[in-house]
Length: 134
Image (cartoon, rainbow, N blue to C red):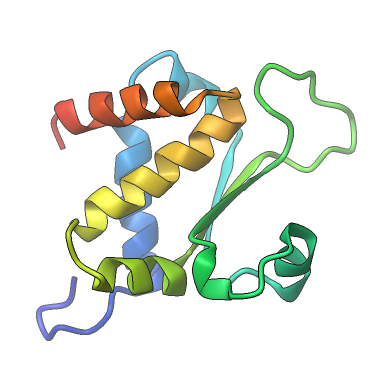
């Protein structure tokens, strides 16, 4: 991202994710207005413990909150998509995909949890995103 070759920052990853979100087709895009996007270095110890994940580098993203089809209850936190920069960069360093494609893939997967989508549905949504102009 930087012309000097520095690792992409939290802001860089967030920008890539927001561009991907903006490219999602309807009806998905309008249902994501209330979903909060959070980009962090690593998941918290509490999240790792809850998910029984030993290595923070294994978790690139996480959806928290009620799926879109369930009624929101008073007092519920808004649904959130968390992206974890260090794990994303570690996976990106393995090569094979651009950072934009990797962040989009993770974002689609986490968005899929919001909608209760199957893996096949998520693959279709990701293919649609790749077809849309940047």
